[in-house]
Length: 293
Image (tube, rainbow, N blue to C red):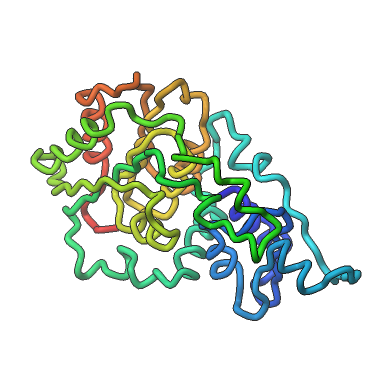
């Protein structure tokens, strides 16, 4: 996420169009699950992005000259990552532009709430629980390709199931409690539908498609919560601080930069479901249901 947003910032500051833009990814890793972002969002189909292996195949030992070049900063040093404080800024034009760019370049503009407003019931509220669960395989194993990269896949053979930190220990009970919200009456008349989604099982386009039809995103602190910037304007983010993660303000800040309502609370793990329901119910009641977006 940091690399994508850094690219957007660079393009905005340098005023570079996507036309004739060549993305070069020079680390030695094989293409991963987010390669479609480079290929589709930051590409005009004239110059395809190249990874290190493709650069070596295309140019070999030649000296290459660039009329203009921008070298990305380390992802961990991105403006969205170093924020360990509550931002004073809100409604950032560049954050909104980034969200719009991704949605449009993935061909999903006609699937947004704005495009479908005439057929959407404004009282319908989608609550998405963004689960953090152990994946069946490491992404490095799933996307490894020894023939078309410098990475030797046999070096990953020892990797088993990928474990994640900040996983909800009573995950099933939390999902069951959230689904009970569909039977609850809310002061604003919300008619709630709850979906439990493990984003690691979706490709990136499917993830964004889920975001643009989500009103309340609920999940433990983790990189996936950056998806909140793709939700409709009326939506809210509910961040669950478990396992002492409350010092991190990344997603509070991104929600504010997007102009989004934000709710959070430190929780013990396992999470007390009664306290969770109170927090999520507050978020649901905060939504303006006069329009579907």
